[in-house]
Length: 167
Image (tube, rainbow, N blue to C red; front, side, top):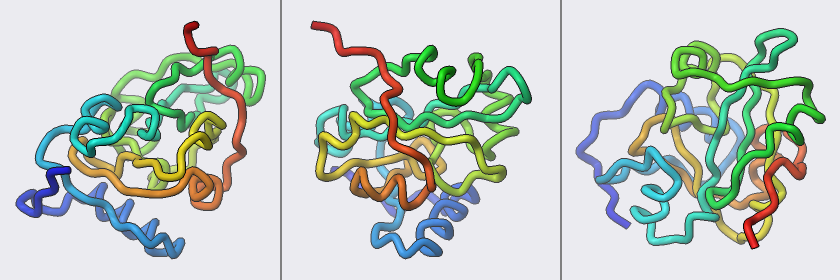
């Protein structure tokens, strides 16, 4: 893993850091030398398998325009029908919606520290791992946690929200 201290603290990373500290989480965000904008980039930078990346996908609920955050394993694809069955019909969210609804840009959406609390679901596939990593508010920032920590940090349920893996 290549961690740098040369990047100045970003306001979004500071928001995530504060949320983690307030929750008593033992691992602060780390800044990587390279981008972790995609799950594969993050896994490569950290020297882990892509499934250990807790990627945050934002959707827009059609009934009320609420942000819906699905935190899923980096090697899985969200099944929008399963998510819709749990929270109501959803649609894709563009970059402007993601930024205005969460305070984060795509590639840095963290599971905590949102400017407005989203409706959140956690992918049960993350439970395959003892340790996972999530974005921390910036495309170069990540933090370490256990899958069980996600439910504690977000208050969200763990659900089946992904497509079946290709055989």
